[in-house]
Image (tube, rainbow, N blue to C red; front, top):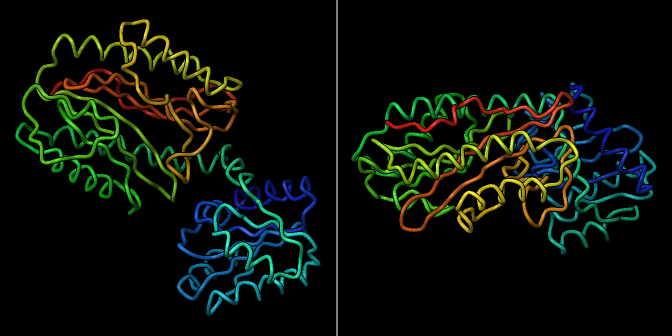
Length: 362
């Protein structure tokens, strides 16, 4: 309850800065952030006076009443989409709202204009401010991400006892999904990369019917979900014994993680972090083989700010949770990625990932 109130209070501070009286939230991610509920439809209204409203159709009436009413929300049920404007106008009149912000990047331009014409207040667009609010995680959010990461780690530990030569990439991926669900993950659309051998140089490769042979490496990137919050990790293992060429490249990626964990901290720019690790990999003899950004923020969405890349203008701050995922990809041979989750806390940078970075040879 405290976290939801605190999040609404952060939004109210934005209202004060913009000199608005209320905010209408439309995106699934922002609804989840402000209510704790996962819904495919609905609107949240937060007013400067301190009132919080949740509007949705009858599919969510019972769960919203049960979970949100005790936390101070007023829950209203609509029978059709045209009633949203009617109920919001009632809020505008009761809370004496003159200027309302509407989350414009979450709806179509046509819907924005329709709502603008229907409401009894001046409507202004709210674009990226809510996304920026979610960059800094509160302790409840961090605990959800940690729990999702523990599910990741247990699932990976179970998986490596299952993998055998002769299995296909798709079979390994299917088992990983099963294990994440068995270990407590929410039922969500998962982000999973399971590629082996020469396929592993495909940075965002998809699992195929390719048979995993003895001596093949397997690059796994995956993330469980807990209470709507995501985790992300990557490990590269070898079925059998790794070649000397593979071991050399693996050590470079392993060392890049050590350097990155020391470098990534409060006040460092996303561009500088990416440059530090990229320079190390290139100076180690693998120029042009690290072919993606170093990392990104994570939370309700898999890909959030702040971004750790050459194009980033973000500055890392206390409360950020970011991925750190250096890699080396050699076309026709192999790809290696090691990915950890880093939490920038008041005490310093904490690695939320406990799984070893040592090379695992099955």
